Image (cartoon, rainbow, N blue to C red; front, side, top):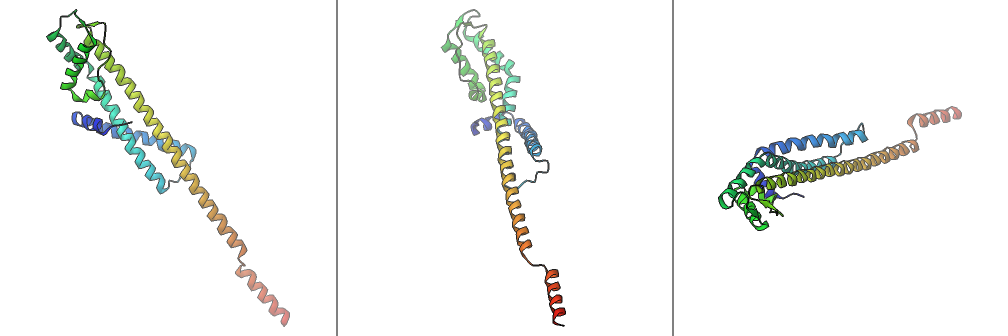
Length: 211
């Protein structure tokens, strides 16, 4: 679901990812409140609701930070492509066919210079490409992987929001039932208790009869 090592590396190379991750998480919390308000227009949050909301915000912050980090990697893919191109030009002829092992070696060179990429790419089946084509093929594979990665993180966020909203609604239902039972118990107690006005009328009537 998430890794603290990935988060640490993202913050190391891009501290702004944390800021934007928290900002997006706050927007997701707005969706969380909207779902609850849509179910209960006059929703009254309980202490457990705030605990669930706090845990949800932390989980969303992690996921959204990963998403922002992935977007930054996509935005710099052209730079990584140029780095692989440089490696190819140093060791291979332009139209020389590159084996899968040689392609993996090029990716490991790239990871050595940019350790953050280790969490997102670990080699691939790059066969049938020559030295001139391979950099673009690797870049396209990275873009495709990162898009799928972002979609998975978004689905996790949506799942967290839905589960959190259901959990809060359940706690609110429980609290409403408790409050309703308390009111019914108080009403039964009040109805069974003789009123002071009625007892005074009885005493006045008894005195009149004695006179």
